[in-house]
Image 1 (cartoon, helix red, strand yellow):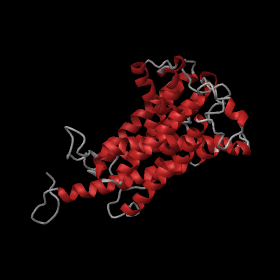
Image 2 (spheres, rainbow, N blue to C red):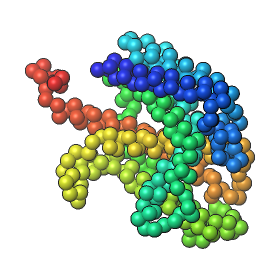
Image 3 (tube, rainbow, N blue to C red):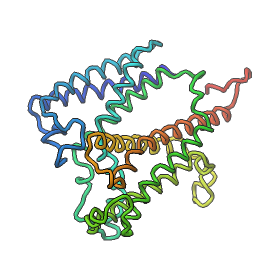
Image 4 (cartoon, rainbow, N blue to C red):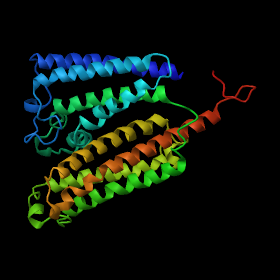
Length: 337
């Protein structure tokens, strides 16, 4: 089963790499749609680490994709060699954590607001899904998909059932508390600004957002706090069994992937956004006396790492519980039916 899973994800990663490599070559040859540089609507080119590239960079994309394709194909082959796994992880990290930027999180955060705005008649200043998800940001999603496929293949290939004891329920509980606590500092600043309190910023800075900008910040803060409440489900019973107040679902077991997929994705986007702020801080783009505008975001990689750890611990705990519920054979081992 391990070989099959590794092969499936390895082939998918290789196919993704071939397709994206062809796209990179097309951009290098003059095809429209290059998502960085002049093709990126970022006004000052400070968001993406690839902002200074031009369409000829597509040849580097093609070369990188070729390496990903070879690695994915190697992971798909039966065997226990460690070399493909060791190559796959840094490639996956580049695609998932380095190529994207903070706009990925903004798109995720504003999507629910854009969905409910027509119901309540909110104009949102004319903002649409095209504003939240322009092609350069959608391209980031494509890159994250490729990185996740490669990571899944590497994880399946390198899985050893006798190892991995680091992700214990006790560490998962600590990780959940960290993942809930870290974003509250950001939430406190944005809620304060919406109420007219210049927490961590000057009065002049606060006045610049009195046209509704801080209300949008308060929405993002509330969105983050709500996510923190949902994170508690990774260690609470209602994260494993639907509560009684949910008609039609009460008493049923929560499918593990219903929690794992969104929690895992959020851990990626908050980490990416936090790394963007860390990069800006190192570059000296912020002023110390305006710490409220940037310091809380610099801790988001901690938030993302804690959430990812909590998610892995939750998945392992649910998997062990599922194995215990399986019917066993005469030898006492789980049935393979």
